[in-house]
Image (cartoon, rainbow, N blue to C red; front, top):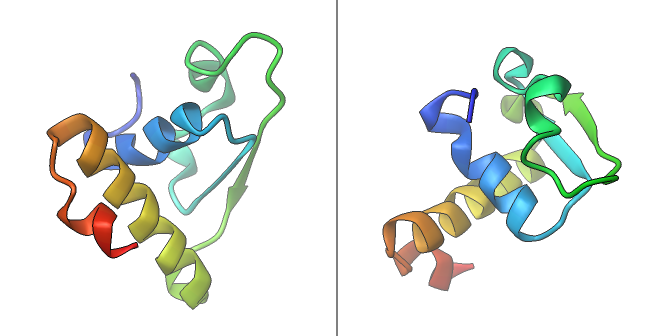
Length: 83
């Protein structure tokens, strides 16, 4: 995975849940050419840039993605169970 290790939870959650939208403030680490190899064949997806500071809903989404990542990648379900 070419993106930063601190951002992998976002991509992991999107792939696991078969989402077609990734909202991130870090476009540098989410390039479409790199994401295509991780998404299902033929999947349509969009990458949107918004700073999580700009909206409380984005902060909640980021936390949820992080909690999903922790559960599946680190076997730590404490935060996941809060959501």
